[in-house]
Image 1 (spheres, rainbow, N blue to C red):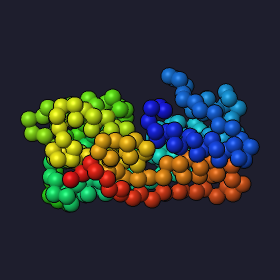
Image 2 (image 1 turned 60 degrees about the vertical axis):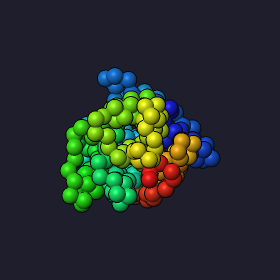
Image 3 (image 1 turned 135 degrees about the vertical axis):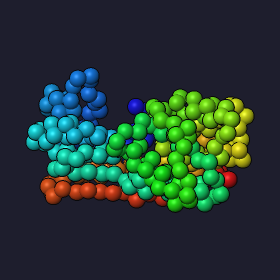
Length: 255
């Protein structure tokens, strides 16, 4: 998980904020066949922050804990929790529209697994919305979904480089994927942005050190981590739904 800077930025801010208030953070995943609620009961936790969960049954089980729960980037139908997110659909739309405004028309989308809800689903919907506004339809051959990892990004860069009809732009749903994608493209002799333009999502440290520096959608990941802890330990029990803003950061990966 921590190969993705998103989680390092999030947890660093969450841990610092918790420690200042006399709490400690425990990082845990659920083993196969185990629920997050079972983890919380076993560990005797005072509260839970869950990142990227879209399972309604998991949410229902968390409600039985009778401890504070904050959902981050999670899309569950069950209510009763504080939530923190960004407008993921708007972010996908912003990124794709930016490429379209630059005159690019054959735009691929490289993303994590796309299910029927969640961050990847909504960012893909934003991608489709932008294409639709320009009279373009989604080509299945240009939707590449898999693991959110540097390695998968490299693989997809090599794949796109070898296509008979390459895209002229790529919207990538996470910076770590985008950086891998750029390396894969360059390894096959594709010039960025002259041959293919690339835009990412997150604005992590990787985006600034990429060659060329990555144009990306900025979200304040550290602020999300800090706010998650503040909501968890707050004595105000009124449910909060915090939606953090997104901005587009222009660098050198889009022509």
